[in-house]
Amino acid sequence: MTPTAAHLMSNAVVAARPDMTLEELAGLLAENRIHGAPVVDAHGRPVGLVSATDLLRRMRAEAEGAGREPGEWYRRYAEGGEILPPDASWIGEIPDARVEDIMSRTVLTVDADAPITEIARQMTETGVHRLLVTRGERVVGIVSTMDLVRGISDHWPRPRG
Image (cartoon, rainbow, N blue to C red; front, side):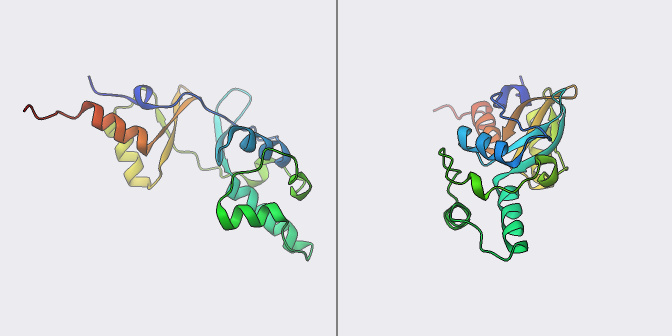
């Protein structure tokens, strides 16, 4: 049996909503120790992707627009890739905006029943490392290049010896 996206995916999807404040987004990313998330509408349909990098860009633009340097948290994250700290020390640095203002509206998906070859084709053609897995219009998981490698390894014929 050929593995499908449903066999390979992680179904522990942490998603953001378009109407979330950036402060709520920062809390979601920090709490889950992640750098990004799909953005889904009220029906669970993907409408975008948002990352800590998107948040950083907005924070920098706001600071520069106000004629000041970005705050300490911004510098720590930008210089060392540190994930948002779980405490609230950075909240004063977050601009007053919504996820829909900073998210990417390009969403790459693969159907849950797509075979491993389709997942590999999409990833290599688009140069992405993660695809949202959908069933119908709803996000049900995420499949990464490491999931793909594990799937290939698990189903690759092994030499008998």
